[in-house]
Image (cartoon, rainbow, N blue to C red; front, side):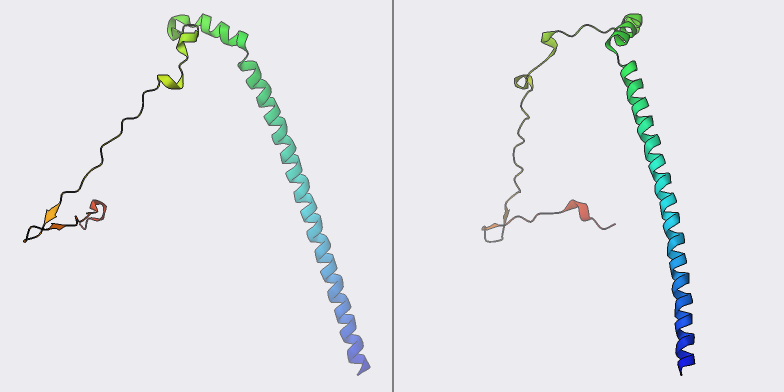
Amino acid sequence: MTRYINALLVFLMVLSAAAVYDMKYEAEIAAENIKQKQAEITQAREDISLLKAEWALLTRPARMRDLVERHQDILNLTPLSANHIGTLADIPAKPVAPPIEAPIERSADGSAVLPHIQDDTRRVQ
């Protein structure tokens, strides 16, 4: 009986050693994935900072002024003045549409019947 117990314990020990080795292997793979993602994040941040610097260079007021002057015959731009800027009071009010009234139906004796609302979106073809 003790032989079977010893054999079972040896088997469990080998099984647990294999499980620990598998966990270690998966942890190493996860650590490599984390390193790779961190490198990708660092590269993306560098790309973003480079693009921000390029955008700042391209949108410099002096450069924009030079481009406008160089292409004035094509663009036909005029300098911005105070009368070009409007206020909210300059915007016309939205017209209010009158409500649509349904026709009143009459029964045979002349009393009013509630109108039926038709839904045109559910037509059967």
